[in-house]
Length: 397
Image (cartoon, rainbow, N blue to C red):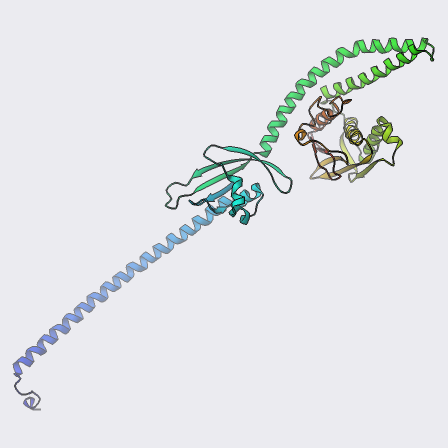
């Protein structure tokens, strides 16, 4: 082919060759740059793959740590409530909701957060009455969350109810032990001259004419001495309740005997069964314990329930078993127990009746303790009055 025919006029063929050479060089440079760019992209892609793998590992580690911390938070025996910087609740573990007696939605509302108001670095102990009637003693403490851009704080809620109860019970037992020792000493000292008084009064009754005033006065002396002797018996029983005669006996028979003795001591109720009624529900066949002392305790509880209802009323005696414990429960339809006396009903010499000695319930408390159990009175009970409960392990060693 004749190249001269393809060459435009006025164009030097040498210039075309130079342009072709330059285009070739540019193409080679582009190919080299593309190769370098491809190798760089491949290297960057490899680095990204490694970085993504490390990031995925870090994310999985963070997720695992978060799940671990969440599991630990949920398993903690104390409550944990996390607050944001603005005071709103970020999270709370189930134990915190249980102790505060609220749902998670209630805690997020302002009303729920008021339960933790006043918490600071210094531990704050407060009493809380839950809607279901449960009484709790809680200790709360607040701490700021360090090294956090968002700020915030965490509140620890600890249940001190059992600790407070045990501390109060220990103090009560120490006081009752001291009072029991003193009461026992006084009882023994009083009983000796009292026996002489009764003996001489009995001689007067025998020698005097039954129609004389002196005979009636001697009878009154004997009656008064018998009442004092009954009080001394209670004091002696309160002073030394640790002497147990443990045996297995019929629960229904124990309840029947205790009710019969309580009615015998209250002729008013015994003669008006249509006004004072005593119902018994025994769901336990056999009880192991000191039959005489338990009968005395149940008799005192029934007698108190009858005496609390001056115009008549209903008394229910319920015996059942809960988790291996025997529960003797007596509740009535009387006026109930004043709120300030809750937890103090077993204190010796504490009574609300002018003619009472304050030793009946103290003796019940002592009998419950020596059986390894507890005694408590709450109000209102199922019938609206007092609800007395004596609970002890049936095979306590």
